[in-house]
Length: 342
Image 1 (spheres, rainbow, N blue to C red):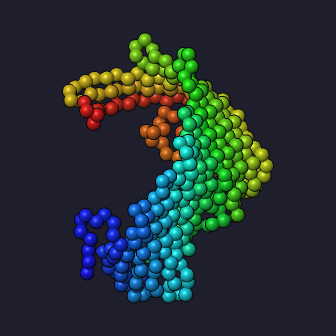
Image 2 (cartoon, one colour; image 1 turned 45 degrees about the vertical axis):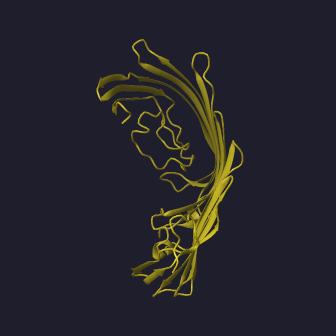
């Protein structure tokens, strides 16, 4: 028996085995072997023996490149019911230049119960997400192009209702501050969702805005903002809320909005801490309506009302649903901080 001493950073050989018991698999023995392929890549091969099922072969591969990295883990087995089962989790991130990068996530499994039964990624979500993307950052501009595919792992999941997102394009721009401090912004989104047994959606959204912050005579702060959002949808087989009628065709909306936000931060020092008490208020004016039954709700279903969006002008998470009509937000923010940043 040989074992590398502490001066050896990477050495091929057996890793510590894992022995356990499972009601589904019986007595389980894992004997991983580590291959040191190079300074920037390695492979771990793990044969798994079970007393109730057939053997499992698991592999993990890691490769670090000059401009990124690639990781993959997978397994394969032939179970007692003569079924071939397995999974793959892989991830890649690569820099193209100082502005652009691209990457992918490929996560698939043969069937819904395999990961739980064989204890692979037991902490994974109930949905596996596969993605390929490219994105670029330059000054105050950001662009991304994404494609997504999903695999649900719950018994109630229907693969025919899971969308293929091909493509999703986003562009965001924030302008430089003008002479009086005003700043423009622009958000553009293009999305196409395709399903085999559920409505299909194509959407083009654009929102342009302008903000002007200024200080009051007492140290209070004001932000005047105006925006205009336009959305165009093309849908197939959309079922309206509370109706069996299906809509096919084009719908859209045009939504202007004006808002004024006010804050009055007050500070009090009490060594070694200090308090900041900040009354906050805002008035937002926009037209009533905007959430037509002919507009699908794909990205605004999960609504959470918390401190991160409490004073947002639109508290929905995406483009598909909007808050409408005149409204007001008001509240009080209190913070306690240590003199060294605690």
